Image (cartoon, rainbow, N blue to C red; front, side, top):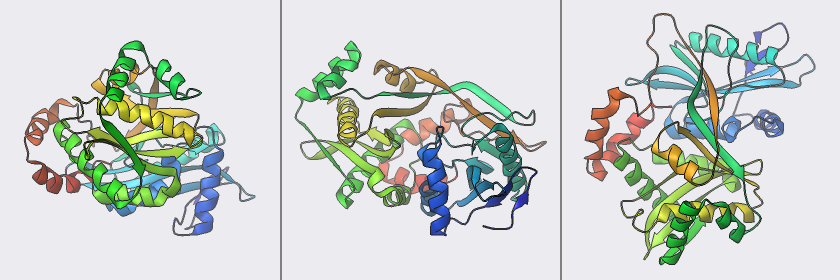
Length: 357
């Protein structure tokens, strides 16, 4: 640990993520906390730092007896296009403060802001929970999370899907599609090829391939890739994380042919069955912006949206950081990006995506 920042109830210090024992203590606290996500694990922070060349900072609150009372993982994002921010967690849809009580949480929020100020960050984003301080802007009703229990077996899982969406899955099952799961170089190549095309078609830059490799290596047995093939050609693929009994499909997409073969529908159904076989009991479909196409798609699968709460604080006089691709200011850029040849998008995308955080 570095020199601590003093607070009345706890000592808050920046953790040394290169220390194996420190990481083990942090991860044990995370796995035991009811509000934890895979984005709180030290593996996430280290993979983001290595894969996107952004700096990881991890604040840990300790009581006088040395017990961890709370923590917040933070990624320092530097971008000429999107500004300088401290984000919890970087490149994640969740994160934020984990604490034993509200008092410790408040102290961690103050410490996060103090660190951001020291690093000359104009914005601090906490992607999980609210902060009871008027200097923070709490958002609610912009994004929603989707999660439900997995069914008892494959047949029950199919019946748990609403009728119209179930018909799409049945159509996919009737096509000559195959599913492969793993983390080999071949799995990684197939996933990146599909994902890069998918995000280009959506008009957004692809993340560095190194980010996916670092995540798979850091999470080891708690991550894998599921890919759907049509006549040996990958048409849909998803990189998923496994955490505390839940599977989270995180980076996924399909090629232009995926819709024809209903490959995305087969992909998620196959992932549900694979996750159950691994011992998972829940399927976490992640977050989507309320009213978006992804939001509707997840509802069609029978998932009930749960509004998410985030907290953001911006320095006095600074403009709020805006990275939402649905914002009107990005409309023209997205339209132009969709027209780029894939090889150009794959070359230009990673340097831009590193700054999204």
